[in-house]
Length: 276
Ligand SMILES: Nc1ncnc2c1ncn2[C@@H]1O[C@H](COP(=O)(O)OP(=O)(O)OP(=O)(O)O)[C@@H](O)[C@H]1O
Ligand SMILES: [Mg+2]
Figure (cartoon, protein in one colour):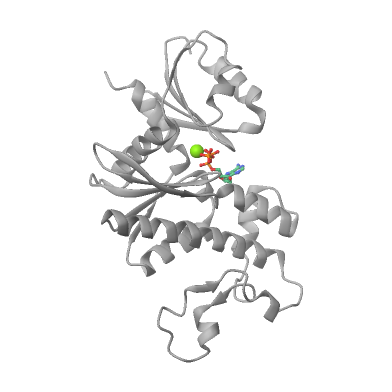
């Protein structure tokens, strides 16, 4: 590639995402941020002289590995993420109105996204990093793909305490299917728990926490639509299911973006296309 490409790069806490257009088609790549030098080598080789817009917490560090021949700009991570979410949502839902955006990255950030203003409402440290860290502490699993695959085989009933477990047949004042206490059933079922069940409960707790925060933000902003993004949803049906179900139980409408981990990179790329 010798002509000047317009490339958006989001170097996050865990993954580095790249977005660029080729022949009017969006291309997406991801790398681990643990080896920024390897990611930079790919960028230097693929786009030796491109226009690059950087975002994300590791973008300054990434810059030190680039070849010095790029035209570099920076965009604030939250602005990039919101712009990218707008783009993907329009593509996938053909919607244009305001919405709550919850980005479940290494950590989780919740925004009110309007056409003109994007406002960060709140965040929580419970996110994709929690998924990896807690899964490792509890089961020794540290590969993301293995964690999400095993969690799919898991059952949460012995580990998590539902409202219906507490009310035991009586009519509960809130839906019995809500979790009353994540991991709160463990001591009542003190046998060895299956790795699959523990992993399902870890992901369940993360999903329920990010949903609770999102729904509160939606209430505060007078909205019902919640768009979820972030690589934590990649190939992760357990998280997708918990988040979608929990959002609906709370009377909001969920939408989990496909390729939502790339919002920041896409938003950064779009900032270079403003004059096109
Ligand atoms: N191949 C993978 N390797 C590691 N984690 C993965 C992978 N695929 C998905 N994940 C999950 O996605 C999470 C990272 O999501 P994302 O890329 O949106 O965050 P980030 O941009 O790196 O972090 P932040 O925005 O908080 O700085 C990980 O914590 C993990 O749970
Ligand atoms: Mg990120």
